Image 1 (tube, rainbow, N blue to C red):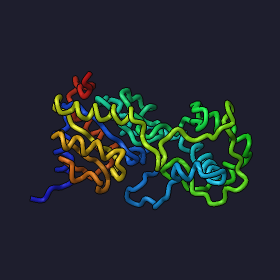
Image 2: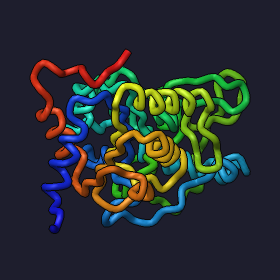
Image 3: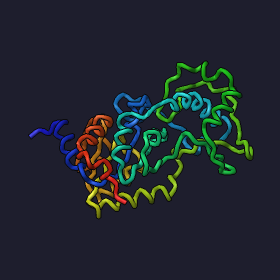
Image 4: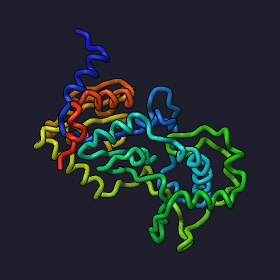
Length: 285
């Protein structure tokens, strides 16, 4: 018998309903907020800057910040969508996000690990001071008057920057405290996710076994190991894994159920599928 998309959705909703949940989200969750994803249908191929390239010299950092300055000015205006709000209401045991856009926090999610950091913060690679991105944005605007306006038609990319070839002349400020190199407080390709974040996620996933819980993946292709490892751990422990994504993922072979659908649609349905008295029953401890 052929399994339809509706059948898969209904099976996933039935499997998740009433269980303690750990939720792993990716870029596909934020597309309804106007932030493009990395590998979804129609996505443009990209080569994000690696950490090694960023620290290689001034020219690389100038190229990064010139693009990111324009892109972040737009990204920070993005607002949580129905999927973010549904997850905040579901209030899972732990919400693990690979996104750096901060929209889960804006939606009110409580128990949260921002696996790759937050684009709204900046860290100095020398003194390690962490400062608000808004303050750096204001400094860059003052040092580069008219830059944003001159590139208003540049295409936004998933990393929060824009497609921009000519970045010559962009002035990159240093750390106000020590004169060091400033970097977004996010995990670049080539960097490792801090061990304490990874362990907290593993602990939550492993606890699902004892509580008869499930792992829900929403909007991630699981192309990189930072997220895929939690799917593998859950599957190895015998925990049900549901993957909701518009396309196939690297974790599909480990999934109990896969649903090819939009995240906002599915998560809203999951919230509505719960009994009225169980608004926070997905939390344990």
